Structure formats: structure tokens, C-alpha cells
Picture 1 (spheres, rainbow, N blue to C red):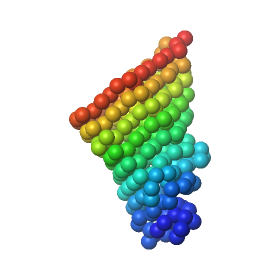
Picture 2 (picture 1 turned 90 degrees about the vertical axis):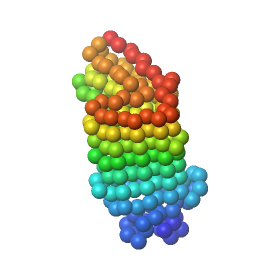
Picture 3 (picture 1 turned 60 degrees about the vertical axis):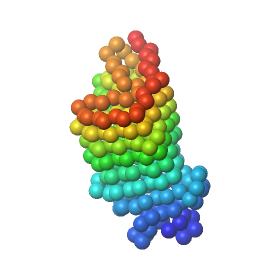
Length: 238
């Protein structure tokens, strides 16, 4: 199944159960869709863009569903959780770029990717220039790039998490502008660069920011050949 040749849109191809692998021509494909069944989505060259259009999460993967993305760009998503990809199932990204997504709200999480209770694998992929805006009232907000809670996370083969940003407004706790690993998750990182991520706080003295590059809370991680550098926190406190 090829979009737009055999099917006019990604939504049409997903509605056809015979399309177990969907090929995307290099162009912008409107997304903001839920992947409710096992499927592989493969780019037929650079420039195959899945765009949420600022309406909702670009791709949602429910629990129990297995999805593989190859060579695509994921952008334009805006949500409270998982602006680019909101994954509760099992997701593999191979040579994928996730950028230009947002998570906004009182307790937002995972502007680029949020993975909760499932598994997430990134191979040779980039998560960059995603924005998390937290309007905190003594709450928490984590993971502008990648958020992993009760999940199994694997990043390898020169995956890069860079230039993601948290903007915190008000009291509360923020962290992990690059990556946040929380709540009994297990992460394995090999040949990964986490750099240039930042937290910018506009807060009272009751606020707290930690781990501009990465934060690990009540979880375990195995790191090999990982570079965490040039991440930073700035604060306008009153």
C-alpha cells in the first residue's frame, strides 16, 4: 500500500486491514491519527513528513499495538502528553526524526515522544527542537524530548536527543529536557548523544528544576558510549 498512489491518505491506508506495511511518498502527509492495529510505516525517500497540523498528537499508539516507523519525520503535534508520538503500545523508530512538537498544560509530558507502560526503541533516530510548556501549580512536568514512564526504553545506533526545551511557568518541578526516565522504567542507551537541551524557568522560589539533559527517577538505566553535554538550566526567579 502506497500513499498517495493506492490510497489517498494515511488515514485511508490505516482503514484498510490489508495494508500491513504502508509506504509514504516524499511529501507532507496530514496525520493526527491513532494507529489502532499493528502496522509498519516506511518512507520512500527523504521528505516523507507526518504532520499533526497543530491539532492533536501526531501519532497515537494504544496499548497492545506494535508499530514500526522507518525513515519518516514526525512533526506538528500539540498535546498534553506525547505531542509527536503518544505511545502506550510497542513502538520502534528507525532513522526517524521527531521535531517541532509541543506538550502544553499544567502537567505536560513528552513533547516529542511519551511512552507509558509499553516499549520504545530508537535506532539511528533524532529527537530535537521539541517544546514543553509547563504552567505549573505545584505539579510536575518532564521530558521535552523523550518521556518514559513504566516503560522499556532502548536508544542505540547513534541516536541523538538534542535542542529540546522546557519552559516552566509557576511553582512545581520540571526536569529531563532531553530525556526523562521515571516510575520503574528500564532504559538501555548505547551510542547516544544528549546535548543542547535546556530548561528555562519563570518561577517563584518554590520551584525546582533538574536534569536539563536527562533525569532518572525510581528507575534503572544501562549506559554505554553515551555523551551528555552542553545542557543547561536558566531561571528568572522572584
